[in-house]
Image (cartoon, rainbow, N blue to C red; front, side, top):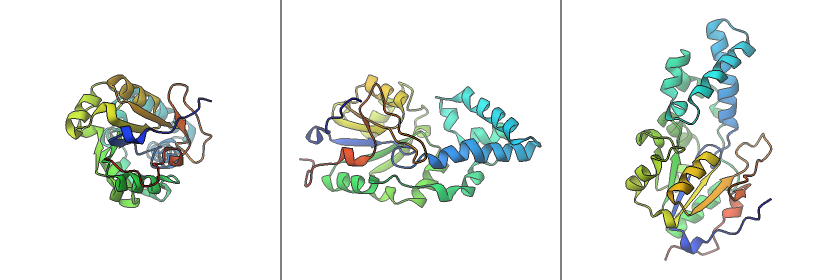
Length: 228
C-alpha cells in the first residue's frame, strides 16, 4: 500500500469534489442500475430477471466512459423506461459518506471555493442535493452535461477551467474514478486523491496509480487553517 502524505493545504486554493462514490455512498447507484432498472425492464418486456439484467448491463457497456452513459434521458429512450421516476423508488438509499460534512464545513470556513463536479445527469444532481445537506457547503455544483464532455475526456478539463477560473497547479480533485483522475492529472491538476471506498457495501479498492483514502478524515485541514 502506498503511504498517503498529508495534503499540502497551504498550496491548495480550489477544491473540486466528485459526488457519487466520493461525497455520497455509491450503494444507491449500484442498487438502482444493477437491480431496479433490470427489474423494471423485465416487468415491461415480460422477461425473467436474469435475461433482463444481461440485456441492460450489455447496453450499459456500449456507452461506458461517454457522456451518454450518465444521461438519464438517453436511458429512458433506449430502455423504454422512465428512469428519473424509477430513481424515486430507491431514493431512501441516498446517503452522505461518513466524515464528509465536517470536511466540507472546514473547507468552507477556510475560505476556499469548493465545487461539486459530477458526471451525473441534472435530475440526479438535483435529487441528491434535495435529499442531502451537502449543497449548503458548496460554492457551486456543475454537471459535465453542461460542458458537453465527460470528466474522463481530455476536453472536459480546459472547459471546466474556463468555467470556474481555477489554477490547476493549486487545485485539489477528490474522485473515486481512476480514469477521471488520470484525465485530470494529464491536464495538470496538481493535487489528486482517490476515494477507495465508494460503496459502503463493498470492500475498499485502493488505486495503484493515485494516493487513495478511505474517508475524508485523511484529507482534513489543520485546525484553524485558512486561505491567506
